[in-house]
Image (cartoon, rainbow, N blue to C red; front, side):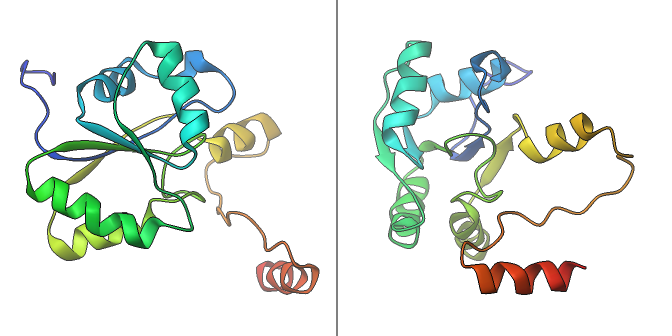
Amino acid sequence: MDLDGERPPAGLYLVGTPIGNLEDLSYRAVRTLEEVDGIYAEDTRRSQALLNNLGIRKPLLSCHEHNESKRMEEISARLIAGERLALVSDAGLPGISDPGGKVMAHLVSQGLPFTVIPGPNAALAALLLSGLPAERFAFEGFLPREKRARKARMEDLK
């Protein structure tokens, strides 16, 4: 329920999940996962463990880098039918160095609703833990695995 006691409207909810500590999951995230009609997950095994820990029983489908393009059509159809769906990544926020970006871009292009349920953020936690000034920073995401590409990206950043 939102602040006025209404059930959240149909749409896709990008739900931030814990990065290593289950207690980092917000009440809002738990409630959203309880109220949606189905959940799409980067890794269904990891997400099933999270849901089991919370006592949540919902249909769980995969949505990862290898099937995200296929799933976005399915998600769109379900949203058009009036369903409430969640998308979770293994840890943190979907779409931030994790699957979800293609789905969001597709939903925007189709005028379909989505929202973000904030959660843990590894980049911000690392920035604060570094002790470096945090007034301004840039986020680059994962560097390429291949040595030559990684070196080229580091040169570009320099």
